[in-house]
Image (cartoon, rainbow, N blue to C red; front, side):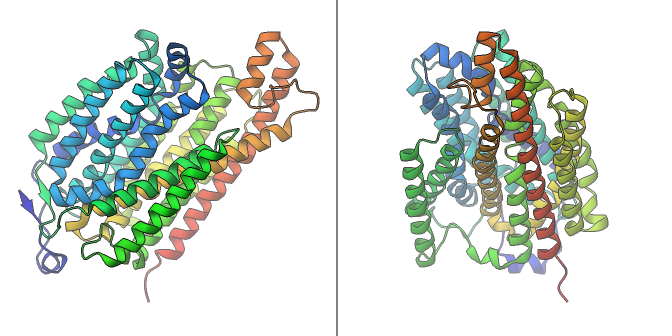
Length: 501
């Protein structure tokens, strides 16, 4: 096992050249990352057949989707501590094995409740895998090469996010809704074999046992907070669920913070937030994901409802985002060494803002090319800034606490995505309803899906045209807000990461 010494000893010794198989290790970790990220979006096109199979309503479908996200986000901090204590390779392997088993259980689900439980277990496996990937990269790559490694990591995550709907549409068409779960089993087992064969073990020799009460409080707090904002983002929020989630979030996070001040071995080193690099890059990343978190949610509706794409076509239409991210990551991996992390982050975030500005001027009859252009610019900016953000955040974390640092980095972004979906989703719905003309039939004003379904059932071309115009105007408002979030992130990076005098 590779054991690290404390940060003081590490500072007194020259940096190691890196693991000889580090690029193969990166490939194995990216295979694991691909699984975790793609499951955030692959289920979207499988929801209609799941609803038909189990006669499930909107609340049940929301539970199927949210079970993964809530558990995933809630367990990240505890999973980061487990990485440092029990070993990053061991934790990632356990997560992949659990992910494979939970996917098989979900595919065989005899009821909607079983499916929700399977998705929750998949979230546990994903939480164990995610911080392990970045923590291992910190150990096997020297600091000069880490931005390039993080660029590959960022590109893989973006490709997985964009490819999810395409893969889901293909699997549902070729198999059934269970195909989106069965495909995980061989892929997770393959990634598990690669991790066991290639990834060296590493841990924090000074880490004590994971504090179970702190882990439970962090999970309760994060899970409750994410659940509350996800429910709040629905067109018609279930207020008892929002209140329960918010209460659990406040109590859990308050209890967690109080316990961290008293315990000898806290799960989270809050002194990191006094480091301008860590706090500034984390805040900038959270602001960016406030906007980007809802981009796919909004655009897939525009492609399907306004441009008339089916689910598979809409998923394929997101390919420019993945292509732009790959291209941006190729340049972003070298940018910190040339222009510095501060300007790499700012330039990438401003490019993201420009991409959102392009998407804000879409018209009902504008066709697909403007969408592709906006997505490509959005991807370029995300890919260019991603390596610098990750490298800056993790450079402020002692190497022996890489698991904790990776978990916090993931947590900041998951919170940004969740809040962005809630806030911008609510803004989209409010602007859409405000843009509808008077006299819209009862029930058709609830959402674009309801309006277009109503228009199709009654061959009401006027209603379809009015709904398309209202949704496009609402989308413009949402995209301009997202552009403002990205620009605020760029300003945060410029101010927080300026050199000390």
